[in-house]
Length: 80
Image (tube, rainbow, N blue to C red; front, side):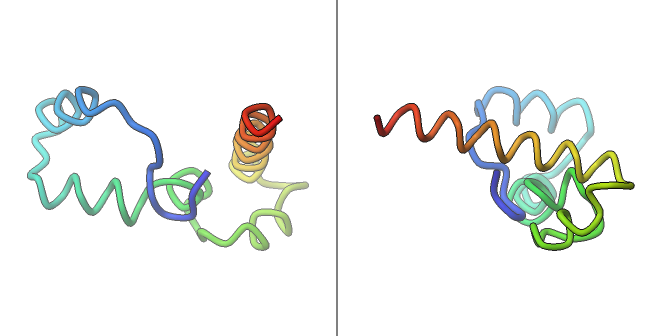
């Protein structure tokens, strides 16, 4: 999981989302590159240190940690 970027994404889902939400190309670019990833889930920060400091009381922090750990697991399986 990236800090503010969306990472892997099917382009068709972007077009569908843009049509449904009436997003312009600039709005979509901003969302995908500046408001996604850890920031998009945790909402208050894109810093994993902030996520870890709130893990006990913030359900969004738990989701970020779970996604990050799952991504690391997938990556380690690929490199074996």
